Image 1: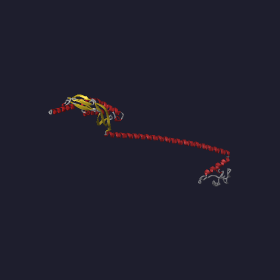
Image 2: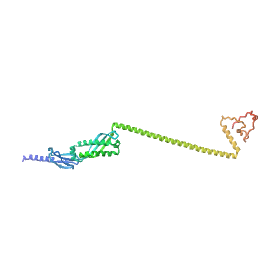
Image 3: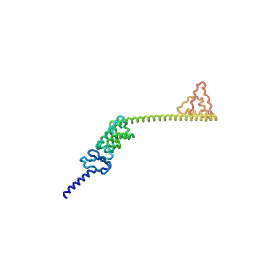
Image 4: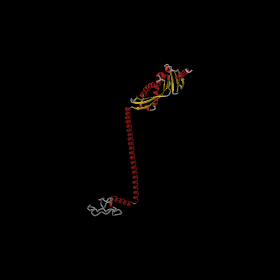
Length: 315
């Protein structure tokens, strides 16, 4: 009995090892490919506990686990040329999922790096073609979404041949290269300067137009004011003449006296005024006679030998 215990333990150990080698677990983030003698025997896509032939080291049944979740790879610093001939640097990434584990195993032996390397090459070519048909502004406009759909469409067939499904393609960055950046800066600077000159010219034009309008309005206002003043002056002159006429008709003698006094005042208002007139002039008719009668002529006035007396200063 004592000699049988080691044998029993060995047998139990062998059974446990066989059982352990025959069981594999697939979690919710995995797929499992069962490979028997180098050929795909089965593909497990649902999580759970599964059985296979033991002794995978004897090339019986082996299990290769494949990820069953969204995966991503990036493609950085792609130098692309747009339709205008300029170059830009683009960073992009692809989100994909392994949806056909059997084909994935057959195409790249289940090697994710090999699959991504193929997709990178195809993505590079697709981005170059899509950007080459458009200008740089397209990547910054609403057209960007359609560009990404176009790139994803070009990757779909190659991804399907690898057992993959492309979920999304995105551009993370689109930048000018150094030389294009400087050229673009100079172009934008020239455009802004030209725009500033245009705005300045339009401002000068508007200013001149407004000044011309203002000058014309000033001339019109002055002309209207002068016209109105002339009208008012004429009306005033007419009213004055009418008043003088009425006054003259009422008392002609007083009117003559008033007019003479006004003439004396205007003629002698300045102390430097000198009058060379005959005392018998009509101008002095009210000097010695309040009635306005002309003074008698002095002796010798007839033959022009008499010297006329100096006019008396006005009081």
